[in-house]
Length: 213
View 1 (tube, rainbow, N blue to C red):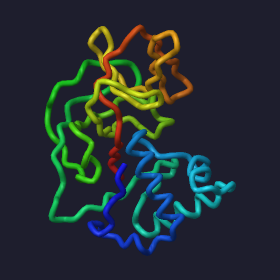
View 2 (view 1 turned 45 degrees about the vertical axis):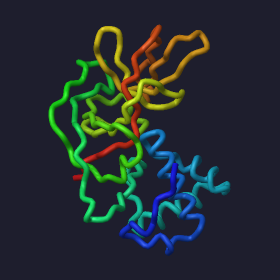
View 3 (view 1 turned 120 degrees about the vertical axis):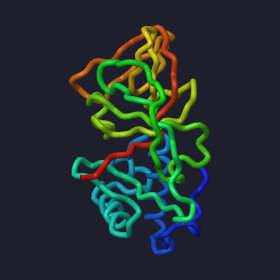
């Protein structure tokens, strides 16, 4: 992933210590790839410290300087830094996706405006509203909007929109087993994975949008 051009940012990244810049870049890359933020342990490992309290300190510094927001549940949201003259980008909001039991496949309905920094260079993108709580431990909650990069293949560990044989769609973590079958894994200990002969990948999660109250 290319580094963000700080000259186009409303923030002065030069005020960050090198380890905080490293932490911020790790957050950007991790969230772009997985659609949710890393744990404190993962952050600590990446920046080469043993204590999660040190990682927590750097997150506090990034939050105080306006680069991220953190929820009470540990959810990390990047504060999008884009120039006002660019304005938001309209992305299709094509329906509701189940983060629980599969529901009807998607059909285009309307558009939603999101910061261009969330989607630049990521190809064709669309949004879905999440229904259910099966991905709650991945910080994807009922009512959230997920930003999806359209693609028909996935790597193990990516959260995908999977179209099932009966025409329903669901949001789960993708894993290809050695047997050749596909396992769709929820991020909720109350629910069991689904093991299927095959699924049609419709895209992968590259971002989560939550309305803050």
